[in-house]
Length: 308
Image (cartoon, rainbow, N blue to C red; front, side):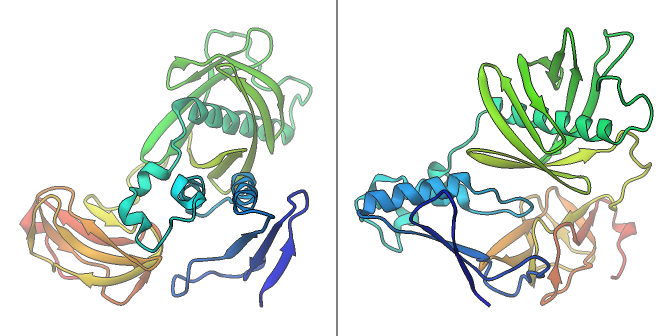
């Protein structure tokens, strides 16, 4: 059932939403979960209101095209009404997306770290009066690790008098104005931002006025052994396998498309990362898969090839 509501504090903005808390969103339907509608006395006013609403929106836990939408709205052709279905053929989508610099990434990582230590401290049962991050020997920093995309980052910190902060071993000039498990207000390299931190298991969603990044906590004491078989290629997103181009025993070359996945009405090629032999193909055409599902396993040794 469609739910329609006005947004407090944002005049001229209405949201039509088709999901509520507890709903399960399948990959079999249109990926649009909600629609933001803006109106104004002029086209320019409506665009400005819509850009403001999208920039202020907090959307955690899912991948969205919000940055691309903002880029389209702010493009001079859209503002002038020179828009048609071939717009993204003429304008490269990556040129429309505002890329955040390393400064805001470092600030977001520090915000996640400070929020996590505040959360740990709030649940401490021993010496709760001792300030978070206390050490008798201050030469060594506390550290927490996060994964951002395919990169692991270590954040170091010492709080209190003589506080210090590092991101991947590089000192970062930081002033902490306030910090609790859900919100962090800090100045990093001269820029002040307020961050909101949402936790879901080991996932951290850090949002600020102009964006959001998703982080994964790196365990301090990781389990021994790998969770995935060596050579596994996994689904980068939920979707449906539409084509399997190889079978066990086939030789493939780096860059060769081995499986095609359909997601969000687009086909995504899964390619071999190296020259190898197909060891097994757990995925089958027509099946739905979640993010991280093993689609195919490659090996360098033909003797390890087996039927699946």
